[in-house]
Length: 165
Image (tube, rainbow, N blue to C red; front, side, top):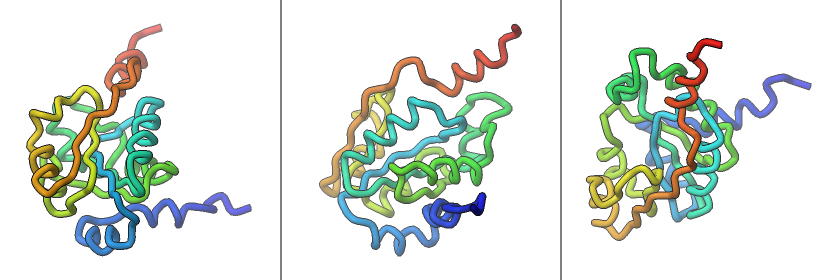
């Protein structure tokens, strides 16, 4: 058996921003959109993405590119995994239909461009304070926060891993 079986399917889910409009046109609606760094994939991420996907017919995950992720101030060595590697990991999930990147600090411009039906963020966000919420609601879309999965955080995981003994 070929060790790379399924790789084409996974990488087919990864889309450069320039080709996004054409790729999105072929996806069933409603389209759910979420974003993040997703640096070290853990149970909280997987459950969150599965819940997000269940809200619609397709899920687009937009990743902070490496420069954008570094500007979030999570630490000088973050992200641990580069943007291409993070995209492959997210694309490998059954819940994900398409993966792209954004270079800005927030995905506001990308959201305005693609007009997802549903914007989803983790429960640690106050949706009423996000400019992204106002954009999505301006064209009739919905914005909601999913409950945060307690005990799962890449930052906390790395802190535990770096503790001696």
